[in-house]
Figure 1 (cartoon, rainbow, N blue to C red):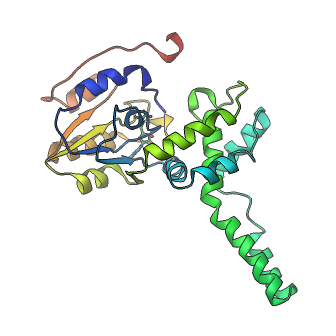
Figure 2 (tube, rainbow, N blue to C red):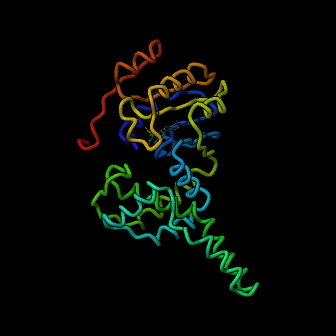
Figure 3 (cartoon, helix red, strand yellow):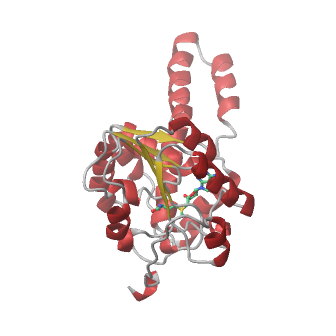
Length: 262
Ligand SMILES: C[S@@+](CC[C@H](N)C(=O)[O-])C[C@H]1O[C@@H](n2cnc3c(N)ncnc32)[C@H](O)[C@@H]1O
């Protein structure tokens, strides 16, 4: 997810002094938004990855149910990790018998009993988002560099996440959480008093992200920002292609150590 923690102080120093709307079209792990000294009155977290967005929504809207659910999914082996990873590959839980069960319940049980059981099944189905969020958090937390791809081989207790979930939920109470393509989002929230902090997938590392990102997307972003009435700041890896694309804009360069060297 691109760890920004070590460079946050540089980013914040580059933020404009005055703005009224803070908008992050590529919110990712939320690190930049969550670590700001204080929340802005109007702030928007957005990401195109619907699993990330669902995770933040569930932590914000149902922190206690989230914590309860978390306790039900211990995960401390490569096999468990792979089960979850495969689930996210196919994007579905094993609910294949649920509809059949609902139908049979109506036929087999007397009305009153069936009503109770159907209610339970419906609740299970409604909790799909919650279960998905919990499993996604585990996939990230137990994977190497939070990439969700390979098992980190590090023991980790989910209990240590309980407090974090409560804090994140509280912190996001007044944050708008969106799941849009950046261009739609920028157009929608653009005002003179807006500030967009954009951290798109880096040039030639686009494959890292589930949603992918093409050269046309980099151009789309540049054009959307060029048209914006609000202020903006974009982070990128330093390369000729991006320097040419943003020719005429102000650059601030800095070097950071690779995660492993920190
Ligand atoms: C470099 S990461 C953002 C990292 C974030 N600043 C952090 O600290 O974790 C880029 C993010 O862009 C998202 N993304 C990819 N394509 C997108 C699109 N078309 N619109 C919005 N977000 C997109 C990815 O899902 C990914 O989370």
